[in-house]
Length: 430
Image (cartoon, rainbow, N blue to C red):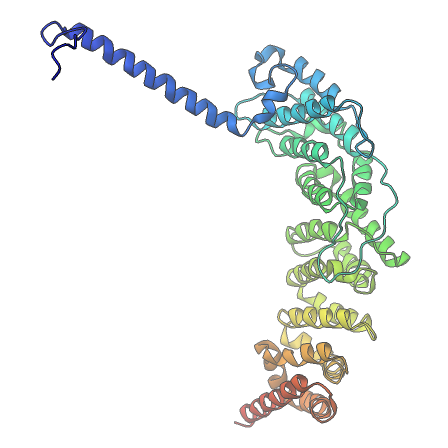
C-alpha cells in the first residue's frame, strides 16, 4: 500500500456514531431511489399527464373536484373537425389528454363520482358522439362480420369518450336512478342511430354500452327490444344492406340467453316474424353466426320452436346463392343437434329432400357441405331411427351425385356417404 495516501479517518478514529450515520444516509438514499423508480413506473403509462393544461383531477382536493371536472367537461364538449387541418393542434392534444384524465379519474379506486358528476359526464358523451354520418357505401356481403375499411379520423377523441361512458356504467357504486333523466328513450333513439357508423370500432363500443344499459335500466328493456326489432324489420322490408346488424344481434342473443321460461308470446313472435325472415335479408352472410346463436338459444329455451324454425329455413332456402346455401346447411346441422326425435319426424321428409337436392347441386361447395352432414352422429341417428323414410328419399340423390357430378372430391365423398348409409342399414338389420 502507498504510504503517501492520507485517509480522512483511521480505523481507530472511526466511531460507531459515524458508522451509524453513514448507514442511515445510505438507507435514505436507497428509499428515495426506490420511490423515484416506483413513481417513474407508475407514470410510464400516463404520459398524457404531461400534456394537461393544469393538474390532474386525482390531484385536486376532494371538495374542488366536482367544479374542476365540470370545467374539463365543458372543454371536452368542444368538437374539432378532423377532416380539415386544424389551426391549432395544441387544443386537440389538450382535449385528448383531458379525456384521458377524466377516464382515469372515473376508474380510480376510491374516487367519489356523484350523481350530478355522472350526469355531466354523460352529457359530454352525448355532445361528442351524437352526430350525422357522411354518405358511405353499404357494407359488402363478406361471409363474416361487418367489415369496413373506414376509420373515423376523430377516433382518438371518440374512443376516449366511449371509454368514459363505459367506465361510468361499470362503476361498482353506479346508481341507475342518478341517470334516469339523461338515459331515456330519446337518448337511446340517438344511440341506435349510431349503429349505422361505418367504423367497426365505434359499433363495438355501442354494442357494449347498449348491453350495459339493458342490464341496469329495467324500465328501458322493453323499448330496447322493440327498437332492435324495428331495425331488423327495416332491413327485411327494404332489402338494403345495413351496418350494425351483427352487433345488434349480439345484444339480442345476450337478451335471449337471459330469458326466463316459459317464453312469452312476444318471444314466439320475435322468432317467427323477425329472426327467421332475417335468413332472406340483405347482407345475411355478415351476421349469419349471430343470427344462428339467437335461433339456437330460443329453441333451447322452448323445443316447440324447432319445427317452425326448420320450416322457416326451408321456406327461405336460397336457390341461386351458393354461399348462403352453404351457411344455411351449417345452421340446419346445428338445429338438428338440438331438435327432439318426435319433432324431427314432423319435418323429416321436407328436410331429407332439401338436403338431397343440395347433395346434387352442381356447385361443388354446396354438394360437399351437404355430404358432410353424414359426419354428424345426431344426423346419422335420425336416419337410423327413420330408415323407412330416409333411405328411399336420400339414396337416389346420393347415387345421382356419384354418377353425374363433375367434381372428383364430391364424387369421392358421395362414395363414402354410400358406405355410411350401408353401415347404417346393416345396424338397422342387426
